[in-house]
Image 1: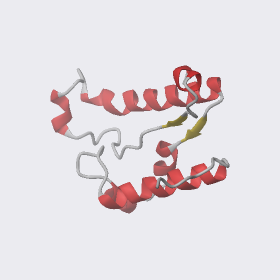
Image 2: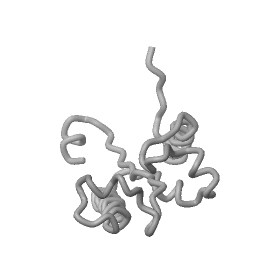
Image 3: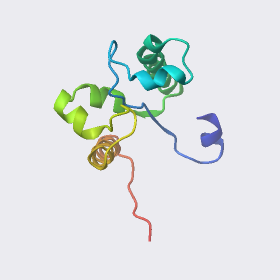
Image 4: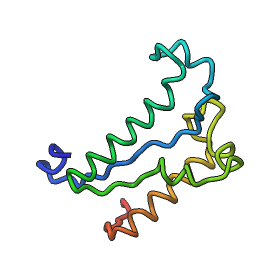
Length: 115
């Protein structure tokens, strides 16, 4: 955030959504970066809290994608995420774009289209 500001860049922080649920973690993730698969959801939640804290401390615009997705139905979550629970489907990408656009408008961020 500080580097962005020093270079004239308007920082915006985003939290990352996930469709992982405690107790239903994908088994294939057990072999990746985790000593215990049960840590997956708590580690992600810790990351989300850290982003929110930095945004508050630095007084930076936060678009809380995680919170927005948490409000969705299970049916929508299944439509928006691939089976890995991390990567988005095309429909999920459109949902992210919609949330980002609405967040920028709500916070009066000037929107310009590239030529």
